[in-house]
Image (cartoon, rainbow, N blue to C red; front, top):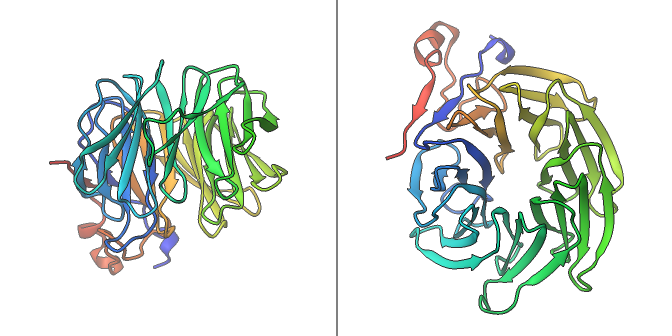
Length: 328
């Protein structure tokens, strides 16, 4: 039976009580890889990335959590929230390590490659970099955006920061000088930024468009229109396909080379806010307004994680009922 005749059966990860607005994966480490979710319930959750099994919940925020990050080896987590703080956590014990005070909602957090710094983006229209080795030192400050920051990431070997904001721009900042060195202008506010696994391609969603840019030059590589206002997109590690989701509750998969749609299916019972490929590319995760995360197989029918490949005669028993992975 050809794999494309098999139905995509997602794993549903329950446990959150409000919309899931952002996701991040670690790299592959000794004990597999991990997935963290940001939710308006104020409690970011850590899970095993390949199965969705709940590992723990980070307790301490007093408001909706808007952005999350894991460092590469899943030893540290970061979260940004409506309580005006960006927090850094021990991802093994769940203990809070640092809490960085802001003057408005923190929408975005991200680690650098060495896990020595985090970058935050807030509704103050400011991007900040905090040094985790010297947490009491004044942060690096990047000012100039005309709207709230949606997402900010380290790039170009951590020498620069790329940020997207509600001023219809994406801007590149040089950390050496602290100044803006490049700007991309859009017709709509950019909703998400992703840097590809090989650090070469920047993926930006804006309106119903996904555009791809060379990270070293910010030269546009390609642009694809999708059938809905898109909140988030993720490029597969081998750069053959990308997935996206947005307002129409659907999950889409596109061929990156041709720009053609490969498949789409109703993914959730509410708008999709965040999508992300796992570090091995075997699955992608989605977070939605409906309060769930779902894990989807890149190659349907492959034995991986909790998915077991079965003979066609057994399919009805094993794959037809959606699996739910609860949080304790």
